[in-house]
Image (cartoon, rainbow, N blue to C red; front, side, top):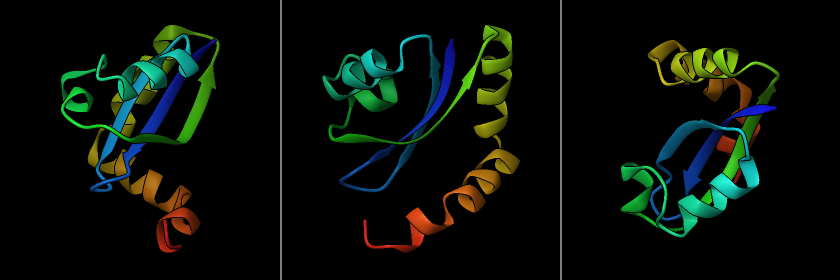
Length: 87
């Protein structure tokens, strides 16, 4: 199984979108500073959204889409309740 995920930084509400075959381990690595360059600079990442795929190429394609402008608009629509409540 492959996961496309959205992390939100609890300090500045910035987002990070990625994909991994082991979601739990990957989120832990991001929070330890052993993640992507973007997440290594900050701490306190929270998993707020993910999708599961059987095929790695499908997950990579979805990650690419979610990182685009249209993908971010999609995520904001999907997370409307999360984004409007007090985090």
